[in-house]
View (cartoon, rainbow, N blue to C red):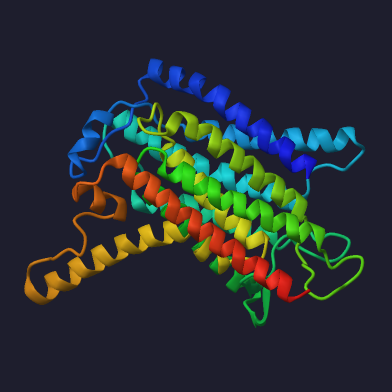
Length: 363
């Protein structure tokens, strides 16, 4: 537990202290946010606010993880495990895809960056490489970082996917979650605060798994997850980094995380779910992200359907994603953010409750 606290504190302090340096550097370079012309008009005042702040989140998370392992090494422990390194690969890899997207927006002075095919291609490469590697590197007990079974709070033994099926599912989860967090990152601090809650839940889940392994002695309700402590270190580091970044990203934001941060955070959530064998539970833990994504799907689907049937497209919401619907309805931005944080907290707590109920139910 001390090691988890160390990585969380180091990443928190690093994020709080280093983000202002990133803000100053990006201001000098003119790395400012472009605003959608069709978005809420109240956002136009945010044009020029430094973006790509996700580099501070990524750097602080990696630093927290490294600091934790230095602490372990001082006490005579081993080095990083495969699961932690794979999660950081996914985290940094998707952050690089987002960074390219942000950089194109800045260079070309527009609100759209990478073409859809290029972005999906980047997610495909990073996601598939992560999925393939996570089936390798078996430890002495024969456990790979990931399992080819579909999982909820643990593997569902009756549903085997096979190696190819697992890779496809992992890619879908990674792409969907990274895009969901990207959609949510539309108001100051919304994505950072909601992400911190999900990472907090994963930290607790991994700690329970770490304290109840199936090796060396099998017992009812134990967990066959490889490297749960290392996974917890990554989750706790991301938790601290998000909270530290939120200090500067809260309304009125002095910096935005950009696609650099949102795609990296979403990918990390997906990776945590895959390696902790809680893939379906991610939908509950990240309930806010799921709802916001669903609002966009409903809006687009209904518009196309009604245009096909009547010739005139109709909308369910004033604007999608969901938070912009409430903005156009007259809600203050801070009110939306806080209420959505409450929703995110309820979803994360409910998901954690489902996991703990299974944990208690299995003795």
